[in-house]
Image (cartoon, rainbow, N blue to C red; front, side):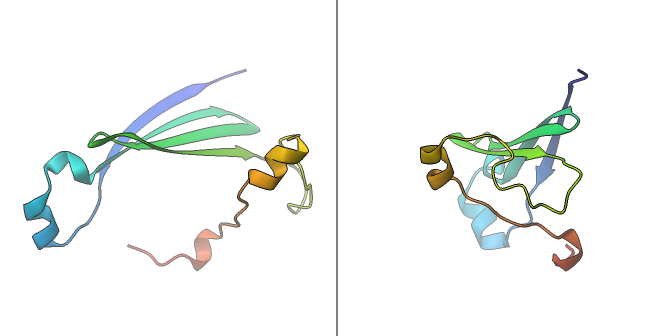
Amino acid sequence: MLIILAVSVTKVPISGWLKALLPKSAFIVEEKAWNAYPYTRTRYTCPFIEKFSLDIETVYREDCGDIENVFKLSKSELNERAVGNFQPENEPSA
């Protein structure tokens, strides 16, 4: 299994008045990605908010997204999960 750790720092575009109120570290988002195809995990963090993180787990399967429980979660975990569809072609460009 090949695992690649990539770290990138992105500055978030924010209005001028908000920039004046907060330190520069509040506008930095760090992305760490672990890639072991067909499984990937991505974590987004902000150094300004130490306890904040957003984790995204992805499993690639040869289907049209029809597998209901791709991560083999328990019934209680299934009830707690949030499922979303992401279609980059429908997202506004920056």
